[in-house]
Length: 221
Image (cartoon, rainbow, N blue to C red; front, side, top):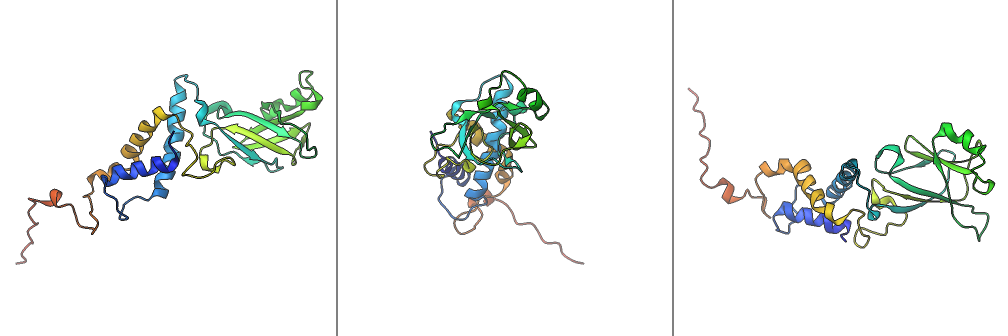
């Protein structure tokens, strides 16, 4: 399994042709942003053909319910497919366990609250609107307790369980990593293919300029 730094430095090594140099047209920070973006796009395409998302793509993120909603940094699948589960824990009880919450459309809350299939112990429900997560109890928003969100995040480094770029496994199937690198090189860095390679002293590669004749100057009459 690869970490974010391993993927980023692998791409940087390909760009530089294996020559270690601080003089680069793209930074590691830029590469990491590209990795997050292209990972999200590839995962959406990966599941468009009916394939299931791999378990490695999911992360657990802890958050506190809020009246203003929790910003959901999830991949933009249809029908909240990026969210596997949401569980709630009451902070007033030390021994309480996390209880799974049903994820419903906001207009279905009234029906579920009166449904005999929803027990009083699990009367809370979660809704997602405009990339924000809300927890409801009846017609009131919940702003206490703790949530465990199991989801595919658009930026994996924002998960509460993410440690760092050196040790945390990057949440992407290994078989997709070559496609991820290829996508970044072709889409984001294709312009660099036509730019003369620079060496450590910012000199244009001699092999690319060898044999080229200087452009003659125009003589003014």
